[in-house]
Length: 365
Image (tube, rainbow, N blue to C red):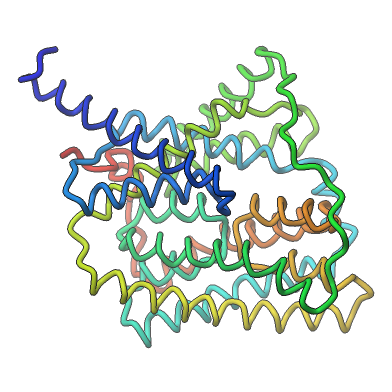
């Protein structure tokens, strides 16, 4: 390829986009920002896009990124975590109901106060993990910029505010857990089985036109292997982390041509929907505290509508039962994930085949 070749220009634009995303992620990791990889990459690429740079990630690369992220998400499902669902039936049931109420409450707020479209309000209000919701939103007609801002603000506020709030009320135990990264010990045979089976389930869902087939299918395959106890391996960090950064790059590229007034409008929607979701989560956490003997700090982290991985890190950092938090975060995530297709049908009209369109995302420049 030569510099005058359009393919060369697109390749250089993609490389520049990924380098910008990596720079933002590294900076946010260095300053210990919550959800650093995805937040840093999104914001860095968004700034570059707003600055006028041509930002793009080719569809085949984006497809691989979704599969890798889906595998990583599915790896959080373990037999021990699934066993916790049986141990805490009442609180598991209540958090599942609370997740639906948070979605409906925040969605109603975004629809009535800020006049968001049904698609945008649904994914902006969804209290699922940030990476999951972003992947799903990109496979719909939602306003990805608004969804990202709302989701990012919620993750940041929860990650920063929860420890301070627990300490303020004297509910936080001294942290004892080490957050150092564990060494990668999985065999490449296990990794091959995990990647192969998860890719197979991803394309199986794509074949039946399942919405967000790449991320959902890979998550399903990985979850089956890990939840059954057949597989304990996960993809190494040096594969998952760049995938998260690349996902952030695909999202950040959507911020081009966004006026400042629109950004401020999104910020108001983000703060308002965050307040609605937190109020609903708090009400349900208080209910469980009245009905059980579970420590209030455990309930606060378990019921918080933040990203699953972020809440797990907070649980470890704050010396809170990670199995309890993991089981409830998983229940919340599953409740939201399973209800989203129904909500999409109810509130956004007839189901649409976004899978094929999503596989072309982000659009070629």
